[in-house]
Amino acid sequence: MSNTLLRSLSGALFVALMTGSLLLSPVIFATIMLFIILVMTREFLSITLIPNTLKTQNTIVSIAAFTIYLLLFLYSRNQAEAKHLWIAAAPLIALLVSLLYSKDARTTEKFSRTPFLFMALLYITLPMSLTSLILFDNQGNYSPMIMLSLFILLWSSDVGAYISGMTFGQKNGHKLFPSISPKKSWEGFFGGMISTLATAALLNYIGILNISLPHALILSLVIFIAGVFGDLSESLLKRNFSVKDSGSIMPGHGGLLDRFDGALLAFPAAIAYIKLFALI
Image (cartoon, rainbow, N blue to C red):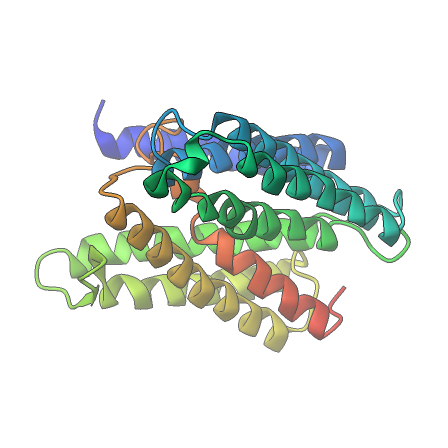
């Protein structure tokens, strides 16, 4: 099976899973998101930490990630008060204390990498957990269409950039950021931008993205531009640690961190825009 076909089938299954879980139930979607967060956290730490070190701390980070997402989800669903969010501090405190007693932490080289434990929560858990803030309306009713629109816009950006880059930027294209990602081109950049804008207009027209057209177009640009920087940031991370893919869970794509790299900046930026202008 060719890599393109494998990539397409894997991507289609991923889209079906995310779309189906969103439309079926908030609990199903939250379960899928928790799985994604935990896998991405493991992938990130496997890249940034020395193998077979800080195992206890790895586990605590996973517990912290689980706690942060669950608390924000329950808070957004009006099933938890804001004061309960402080529970998330417990695993963070445990993480700090555990480092004092870790034999790995006594070695300078290993200790220098412990900040990546906290970075995993800031870089992965927090951005993905913020998605809960747009899943429910002010009365706590499940309203998944905005979140679905963000996914579709991000996917259209990736598809548009890939097709345009392969068609126009592969041989004689103009490199976007050659020092970090040699395959990305300006042709792919503008192809992705046009695709995202067109998709936003379509989603707005058919009523899935039920906000004004100007806001829909601006939101699509926010997602696209932040997504590009998110993609480049993960490329820089992998290049720094001499890693090609973050994992192998998605054939043809790599790891979940490779699939969600753009979302890690795009979703927080888009959610900030939505909240700033009270679009939901």
